[in-house]
Length: 118
Image 1 (tube, rainbow, N blue to C red):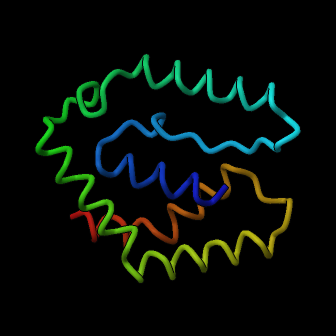
Image 2: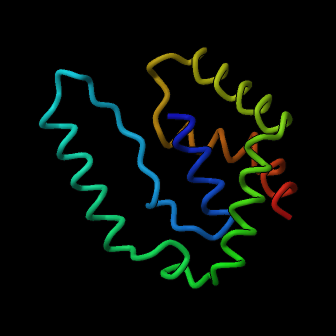
């Protein structure tokens, strides 16, 4: 849940539609659910169109933004901050909602993300 919030936050910050990322769980015993998840996500991405084009970002700029995002997720400061967010989520147990996780990622990591992406 936390990874989902972090990736969507970074995608939003670099101008890529966060709907291009989807992280859902399906066990090996849930083949029909897995097929539905993949089919629905594939349709969603097709509807969005080519990466960058529907966001209005030219290919060179898109590459530069993705490179900055890759550099950010490789940064120790972000990884440590995300580890702290994860600890907070675990302490709360099953009581934490996805909205609370998104708010926690925003609160604890926005400054690091914005600073790195400048």
